[in-house]
Image 1 (cartoon, each protein chain N blue to C red):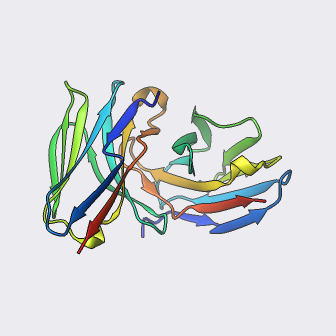
Image 2: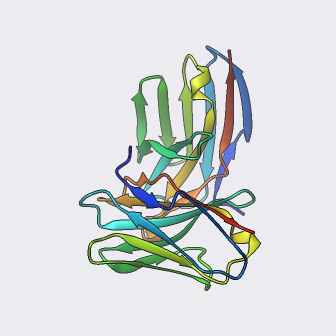
Length: 111
Length: 110
């Protein structure tokens, strides 16, 4: 158990809908990273937050947004969902810039 | 083009064999991670390397910064080692986010 929790575990929704994925980092970790894993693209970095502020952006679509709250949990919002957004979404947290601890992931299926 | 390349893509070995998975990267990095992903999907960090060599049980990871190359070795492989192994470069220019290889799918047969 990494200490990082993600909810929900599974999410099935329809095209055009909006969903919110939640991540609670390990106690004391200030950084949260979001990653997407799809069959064709593999793992890709989406966005990083550090202590409530956006720190780095990767291949995140404009339809996606994220935030980190004062209690350090983070939410990834995915809107106007398309079939291609079906993927595993992982968050990871870290205390230092080197070691990252991954959550169990949220499996999103868009029908 | 992915900045992190892994080989082989797929690997089948018999129990007890010595296994090597290779990773090459094309950008300057702060460190390199080796991750393990089991069929259930969960990701576990095995090693984080910035130089030299690390060992944990039957797993050994090495990195050569000058050659931009890292290897993951598994000694006395076992069917429970069957998983996808992913190397990921930590790029200090992108907020310390990870840049991933495509993964090596390992199957160890009894």
